[in-house]
Image 1 (tube, helix red, strand yellow):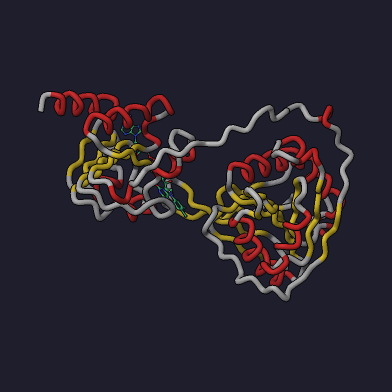
Image 2 (cartoon, rainbow, N blue to C red):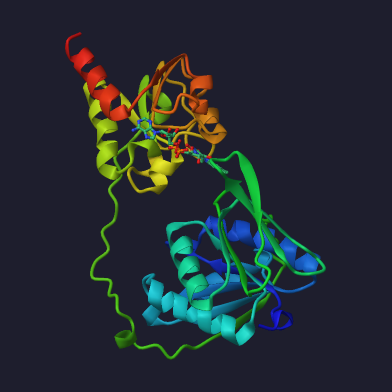
Length: 332
Ligand code: FAD
């Protein structure tokens, strides 16, 4: 692979409803800095149906150009059709770096593209930089349970890719005088080429959670092991009239809606009582619940950091301890 053929920073522009997702605008802010440092253009890659106007909307946020795939085949996000567009565009224009939001779409698309192009992908990045001389992307992310920051390099393959968490980069203040160039691309892709069909879109009906107003919260983490395991948290909360909270890892596993997430990128809570069950106690979780009146942690690891922030700690298996607590509450 001739690395010198690759040039430019790209941001995958995710469409959310009728606008560009905020995370994509944040990535344009980060991408702008890297493109300037490297002296290369910053481009957006926009795929969808009827999205031409959205292409224009990103120039004030720093993009120099937008590669646009506007076609009925892209009406709904499907891994296959979108990855074909990204791959074709990469093969045509050879970007050095591509950034995606670490959303469900961004993560799905980036991993499919990385696999197909046999290139590296750093997932869930929280810090980005580029070496001005070599063009090497320095993508950093927490590792080993958040105890260290790992900087991951992709030395031998291009494009270098990263998914970046929402809200960690900053969008530039929009400058309406900034304009750019829309480069319209065509792809020869037929509906018959795509193996997945969208039959129906069911909108989520949100149950209203007011975690910030709750007196008692029962929060569960990755230690519950599965969606079925997390049901234990709901049952316990139901029994004692508490509101259900969760760590981000439980939310990301799809066990519970993100409205229940407590912590730095979730809700900050101040209940009278907070149960932290199967939650390790990463700093990003602690900052969201440390002002609770009484913190009770249940964890099978006696060295789990959560015990340092708890008033009471129970070392043991949640699946044994919680049923015992429920029984005790029953008799009260
Ligand atoms: P883990 O760290 O995997 O811990 C699981 C725990 O369960 C372990 O301690 C284990 O000993 C215990 N366990 C396992 N089995 C059992 C069992 N049967 N019974 C009892 N205990 C058991 N996290 C948040 O929560 N909220 C945020 O808002 C948030 N924002 C973040 C923002 C940024 C920028 C970053 C980088 C990270 C953020 N995180 C956030 C993630 C955070 O760093 C941790 O990764 C996350 O909190 C870990 O979730 P967890 O404790 O559920 O999982």
